[in-house]
Image (tube, rainbow over all chains, first blue to last red; front, top):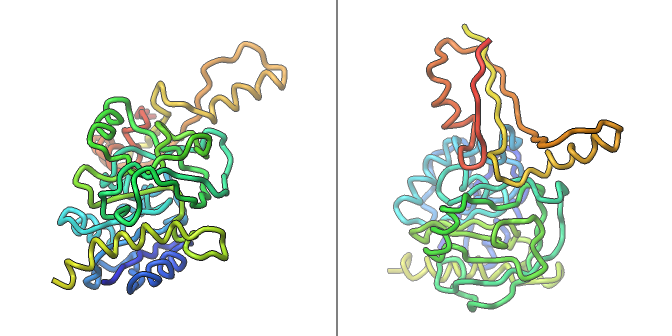
Length: 225
Length: 74
């Protein structure tokens, strides 16, 4: 099973994401200017500042050649995992509901937070338990997830909120303490915290590894079949 | 070509911490009687066909989920 991690100009967490993927499976970097996804089984859109985050975060990246292929891959049901800037890109691309706004504090936040798993029956959380708390760092200025009231109702009714910040841990003022959401079909997921920075005891937590292992466990049987 | 300005602002009702920060800063400098401050974005462009502007806004310049816009022609 092989992950593909997209590298945009301005990405900065693609190597950490690749290393995290390599702890559970194989991984390869995908260049933003290439349309060829090289037959990977899952796509990771990493953190950073794609295309300088000019205009709005993620707004330019969504039109890159690689994103045309990622959007087609997602439409065919392929698993797509967006972290931080990757989450922002997926929202701008219309693959995930909502948008990310400047933190309520207007400040860059960089700290370890607890998130609670709302659903463990997804391709991204099957190695966790519903209700489990994961300790994962955040580092962002534009992480306040927002959706208009009618869209929020729809997202909640469809059980698309996969991760919520634990009480008292919301670092950005996101609506309904949303830390990560999936699409209605369930194969695209984005979150603001950085699981790729929580894969080694040396950095304080290995909880992030569970999300990468989940994707592998979801995909691997299909690849082998 | 026509010179055009697109004014982008946060949608009404969405928390606008930038606007709030400016609204708090002005009285601190002695400017009284300031309310409802919102901070948005100004995009200036020369276009051959201004009729394309709404589509440009919808597809790239504006995120309609969170922003409203206004097209101002000179």
